[in-house]
Image (cartoon, rainbow, N blue to C red):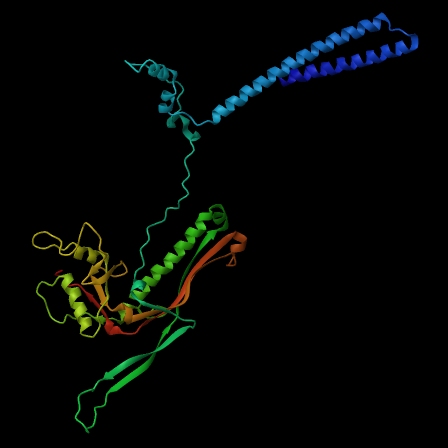
Length: 394
């Protein structure tokens, strides 16, 4: 169609040029002789007729071209529209509309043609993008919540701890020599330790998925908290490890024996062991397996001894809070007055940094994400902690 328009326009330009030349020739004749010859008049009339015909033909062809282009545009818009499902095609069919207009009585055959389904559409179907980043499940750090917490601005914390107490206080008669008591203290210190880790990541990945930076920051901080939880409970004090609770606790030794001792009995006897050392005890640390066994303990009638399955009153036993964590080995337990037994001294809160200044990161367009925290930990009263294992019979 565009070639036809081009050809007509070229013819029209040629005829228009001839009309102009004939008009100029007629004007010159009129100036020279005062009249225009019949030949020139006939030529001019013929050219004007041809020019008018070409203009009409051009307008008709251009109108047709415009109609074709509009039709093509409409088809493209229809192609962009989402395909109708079978249900949509039936709901919008003329047959269904006529059936409803007649009162929807009897039966009606409805034919639906050219319905696009997921099987026939194939790659034309675009999936919905969910922006959520699905992370692996995270364990809740719990040990820190039991302990006394402070801060330091140095590389170590020095404190005095009492090592001896000889109390000879007693009633005395008038004018007699009073008894002498004896106390002793020693210097102790807790060294600030660093817990850290890092991960490499492509800069393009961070640029293309902005939410990933926040997720990565959260993951790195979570890793620090879990490592801290393990160190506070199980650190053995060697090398750069914290000197943890279990490494310093007093071993469980039942003040008296109970026939068919249950885990509930064991924890009460551990509290008694603390009480005999003048500590009240404020909590227990158990593996979730052991806590589940305790909660599921029933009496001879099949009723739970203390658990209320209809509501959660908080994990407590013998009036003390229970921390159930996989940081504690299955079968083991700890009872203590944790608030006075140990103190955390935070030197630097968790920090996450992103940098290209690491090895060949710059030329590889990589980023190193590093997370770290610094703290000192001091177990000041070992006898305020009891560490033990549940009886095998339990």
